[in-house]
Every structure is written in structure tokens, then in C-alpha cells.
Image 1: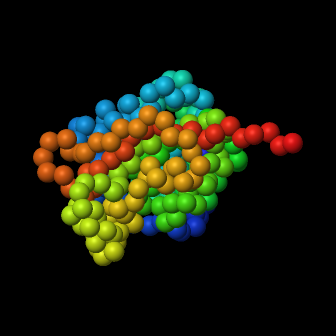
Image 2: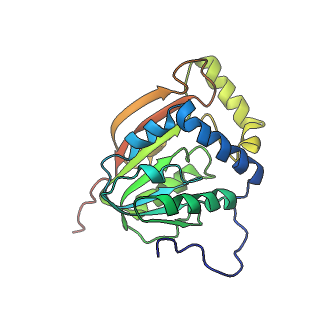
Length: 230
């Protein structure tokens, strides 16, 4: 069974439920694959991965088609019901086994140290508790395992950062499924105890005016090997 989350019976209401945003996001994200070049970003994000991978906040599953054949299994966590249904459909088309399951980043429904890699793709902006979510990332990742991340967040000059903070305090999260514009994902990873590797900053779209959500970070981090207890 590639998909274990499509069982029968009633399912409890998800703690994350943004049906209008989910429909808009599903359409916009597909257009962005070519319009913003996100398909190429996803390809670079996932190249070289192997073993067991957990993707947190899988959305509508646009990463699934880019996982290399060296990946043995992907467990994809998605709390929003509509996006999870679309992810289930995308998983059926993937070339590697993908199991789409409900869950939140702050309470991952998997065992500790069970994964070789964690993928964070445009998710830290919308989790309710970044510190707790990254604590869960560290818990489920084996010592020495890697985090691949592609996130948007704080960026630009003083005026842009003030705009991002103002939008975060007013309408943006309510209109965008809990998204925040002024978080700093790289600093959050560092503060959570991850060792940062190669990092690239980018502005999307590359041509045209920069928007509050344009400032992105793309890179790799590792969970340090834990010293043996004495």
C-alpha cells in the first residue's frame, strides 16, 4: 500500500482548515511552477536525497514528481483537508512511494529518529509555533540527517520589512492560510540547533518588482551527531 491515509470511516475535523485559501493556493501554485520557475527550484531542492524522507506541509504535492529514485519512501504531512486530497492524487503519479497523512508540524505522527532527511518547502511561514515545529523536525530526524529547505520570509530594505511586519499584524495571515511574511527561517533553524550548510538567497520573481513574499532562502542544514552518553 503506497497510501495508508485514505482509510474508511469518519475523520476528525482537521485543526487546520482554510478551504478558500486552499483552492486559491492550489491554482496559483501550479501556475507558479512555470511562471516563477518553481519547478526548477523544487528539482534542485530534492536532488541527491536518499533513504526515508518526511516532507512537512506537502500542500498539493508539487514536490512529489521531483523526488529522485534513490528515495525509498516519502511520508508527506499535510493538515489542510483539500490540499491533502490533492496531494493524495499527486502521490499516485509519483515515481517513488509517497504516503500522505494528516498531521501538524508541531506534533508529527511519526517515530523519533525515523528519517534520513526532512523537506521544508514554503511551510515555516504558516506553522503556528515555529520553535515547536523545528523541535519536531529535530526529533524525527536521525543524528547526522539533513534538512532541505526552501522558505520565504523577512527581506528587503527597511521599508519592505516594515511593510511585512504591518501585514503580519493585520490581514495577511487571515487571507493567506496563516502565512507570515516577516519570519526568518534561517535564523529559526540555527536557533533550533541545526548546523547550516550551503545557503542561497533569492528574490522571486527574478524579474519584476519585489513583493513582500518575494524574499526566499534555499539551502541545507543538518542535525548534528549527538555525543554518546557517558
